[in-house]
Image 1 (tube, helix red, strand yellow):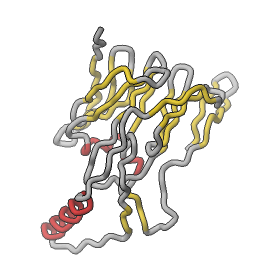
Image 2: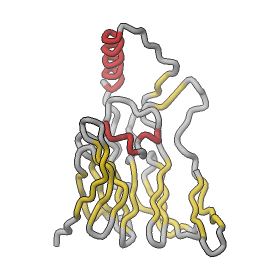
Image 3: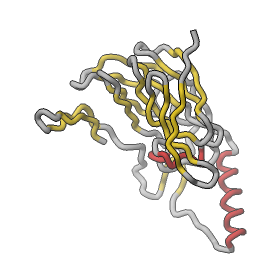
Length: 212
């Protein structure tokens, strides 16, 4: 994944950073149940880069120089021992309902811990919103699913976010509505996509109120 910016005056693309797209294994027949992902958010004068398996987020200017490191505001969360058992029961129920025999063509590797966080979104005043990684029992497998709007079906309980200031200090904690995929944070609003129980998508704008 290439992170950069387009310069209209010269019509050039300035490369800021190169990042691996997501976690892979050396064995094509093996996949991670909850893979780490590389994420980024672009602010007014900086870009935030992160690996969801690490304990920090890197802040860089548009020249590619590091200007800060922000700690992850969530503690490591262990993957429950019954997560794999829950997946097996679900697959067996699907087989009996369809009458078809299903076989897995790859092996799932279960980590001891979930990734430290799921997503990040840059916000005004050099702030960054960091989304907690939900304690799912059903494996994600494809890391980009977590940063793509198709994650709707996994956000029935909403998502927990913590807001960090430019120095990395947590200043707020919020819960986004069920089925809401956050795309943009403004001074007094959040913008995203909502998907209802029928699968219909709509763009939604929610207001933000700051407490004194």
